[in-house]
Image (cartoon, rainbow, N blue to C red; front, side, top):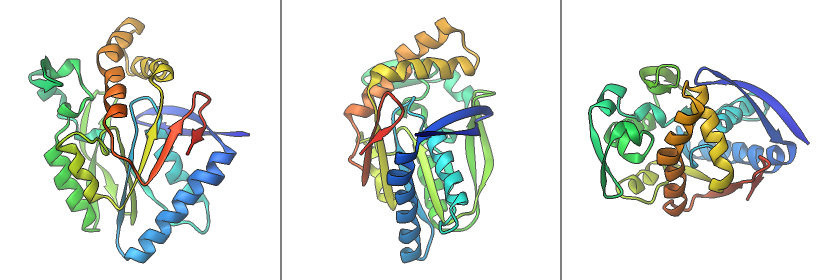
Length: 246
């Protein structure tokens, strides 16, 4: 049986459904695992949750944060995202990138690894791991740009979600040494495309614009990550009905 939950994610109201079995057999055990890891480590721990575009990973980590706050015996986690480390929109509009051997305008491939500031991310993760309060950037789909220092990070279990955190491509493959645990969610491209188009339309694009963008960017990113990612400590597959398979 599925339960429906409502969140505000990046300025949008999201209605998400999760199967009770997935909550009981996957999500709660993960939260319990992280609680024990943090207790044993005696310091802040960092979890990477990586998945292709369209898998609902942002909604999922927000749900995990919510769930950790509802369960009396859990340590509350804090969910944060990778997308605040996109280059700023003005930079993207005025620069090119070499993507899989092609020189292309960044604005045409926004969302691929080459449109993120990896060194800025690495420095911020090192700051995060020191354990104190820090400010974290977000990506606003309302203005299609980065908002610096938007979130105060202050909890002891941090779940960082993003497409490329477990990429096996160099130099992204070096990031995994900075996390304490990892989760990868795979999915088939065939059922992700409609979700990706819908997301772009919520961001203001027309159906035609959203479809074209997804064909040249998001769908390529799905294929790119699925063929070049590292094996995580927990590996899941998102099914077409919205459930998860270990």
